[in-house]
Length: 251
Image 1 (cartoon, one colour):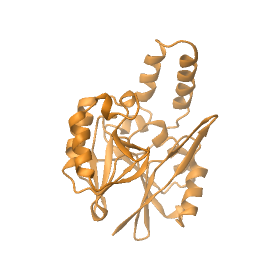
Image 2: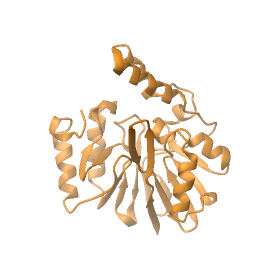
Image 3: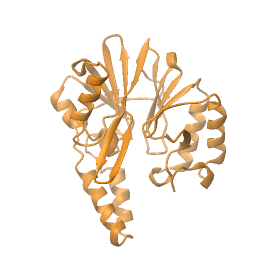
């Protein structure tokens, strides 16, 4: 059986302060980390492993749900220190993780920056600087839809937030690790923020896809573990409402 261990990592920059929730899958003595947080986050990850009683030297794999800076930011420093770790992502995400293509979020930010002025432009320039600080890696192992990565743990292709975005389903725990497909805020489950979704139609199709799975818990990268007695109904409502104002936590 595979154990799910949700990490709670603090990101703080000036007055900005919030948590992200990477996940560790423990299968016997093997450990798999799903997403790595921001650039320079390796010490934060190591402390979180220690606090959970996990030996990071037993980490075998890192699964990247997608290449956003808050998901792959620490991957280079992690595999530099722990070179035996195998990094996996989808085929469509691989060129960005390897630095063969410009980050899609960077392209988006640069385009938006052309229309901004004042403080908004300054904030966007800081965001661009952070995106450019992401370091690429030299090797990655592609994974595909429905691929089993360990006992009862399956990859689900869930594009929308980005092409090639993946989620992870742990059958024994009836748990979906959703990456950025879904978010949770103050006990409310919601669709991924419209501002950062590159294909809204694909996002809805991905939600319809995971709806068919037997899910009792969702681990959102932004929001952490979410459970509800009415989870299926909530997912159905999110799908039916799509990108309407009532279905979003953020504009």
